[in-house]
Length: 114
Image (cartoon, rainbow, N blue to C red; front, side, top):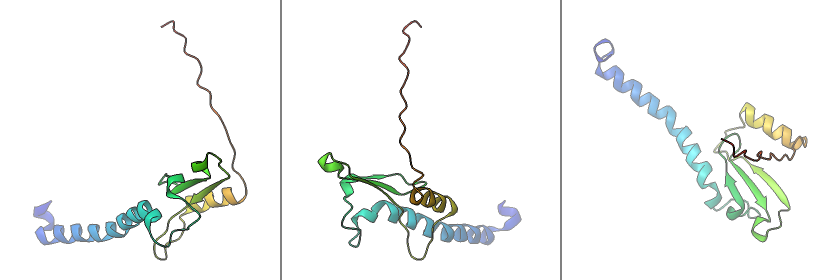
């Protein structure tokens, strides 16, 4: 590949790839430390949060510290002027339209005859 493109072309392509990755990595890092930033919503406690990452950044279980969950909050962290992607938008719509349910799955008892 070096013989076809030349070293300067390879370096240019690598530099461009790194420049495209920087905002993405910065956003992903910001998502994970968002709860530590000074303007983070005061009514959401870090100890009641679970980082998911995809398709939503955090789920907060308000009241969990007191063993009295009163609300579940879905939180998406955005940087700058970024907006929701299509799957985040669909998730927000489902939540806002109360298309949320509770399910349990019971693991069948093992048959010890193996």
